[in-house]
Each structure stands twice: as C-alpha cells, then as structure tokens.
Image (tube, rainbow, N blue to C red; front, top):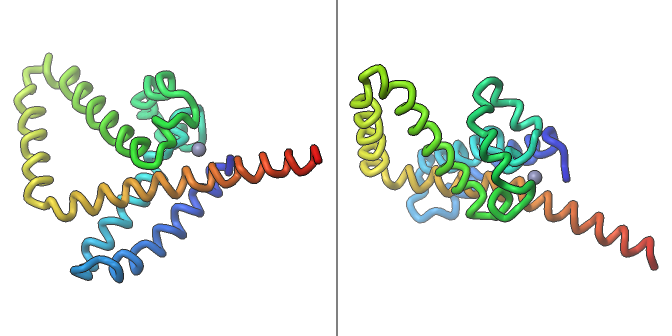
Amino acid sequence: MPGAATHDMITLVSGVVLTPVWWLISPDHLLRTALTVTLGHLISGLVFSCDLDVYSTEYQRWGPLRIIWWPYQHMIFHRSVLSHGLVIGPLLRLAYFGVVVYALAWLILGPLGHGDLVVRFRTDFEALMRDNSGQSWAFLWGFITGGAAHTIPDWLQTSAKRARREWKRL
Ligand SMILES: [Zn+2]
C-alpha cells in the first residue's frame, strides 16, 4: 500500500480539487458548503486515516491521544471493510471516536460531579448539528470522500501488484 506521505499528498491534492468541483456541481453553488466538504475531506484523510487500524504513522500522529485508537486497532483487521470500506470505514471511525470521547468524558468528569457538563455538551452539540444540518451533511460527505481518497489508491496498488505478479508468471 502507499506510504503515509503518499496518502497525505493524495488527500491534500484531492481536497484542493474538491472545493471548486463541489462548488460547480452543487445546485446552490455555496462556497461555504464546498469549503466544509473540503474540511471534512482533509480531517478524514489526515487525522482519521483508514490506517488507524494498524501501528502506522497516522496512528503515531495522535501522540499521547493515540490511546483512543488502541482498542480500534486491536478490534479491526488491517484493511478490512470496517476500516477501508468506502462509506462504512470513515463513518465507523467517526462514530467510534464520538463514543470513546463521550465515555472518557463521563469517566473523568462524572466522579468529579461534573456529569451535567458532559450532558450539556452533548445536547448543545446535537442542537448545533441540527441547526446547521446542511453544513453537517457537507462535512459528512467530505469525511467519506477523505476515506475514499485513501482506500482507492490502496486498491489500485494492490491490483497493480497482483497484475505484475500474474504477468511474471506468464
Ligand atoms: Zn490503507
């Protein structure tokens, strides 16, 4: 599979291209929405990489916070459909991150008597998503394309390697 630097470059270039393309093809031609899609794409590809399912550069990039991804890495097989699937991969990582951060917030703030703050944050966050549903969907679309910008080059390289091996056998 391509290395982290190659994946980063593909994510950056496709993210830059995504802004004008999304702006052109979307019916309302809102630059704000196109930029939100690109933001989701970049965060997905650079921070929430498919390769968090293995001890990778992307995993180490999280520094001490990489502990969040330790269970994920040990539950999900490297390059399985759950991490590298086109839609399920990025969405599962986002859901996993939300659940783990919420649980950690409870574990830390709950015993200190600040559980109400965790609930307050969740309800405020849900209201923010609801009130800005267009931008939330745009972010999710970008999050999915950011995963695809990783998975598709992985697939292409695997196919190319297989074809080369078949060619040599002829
Ligand atoms: Zn990969």
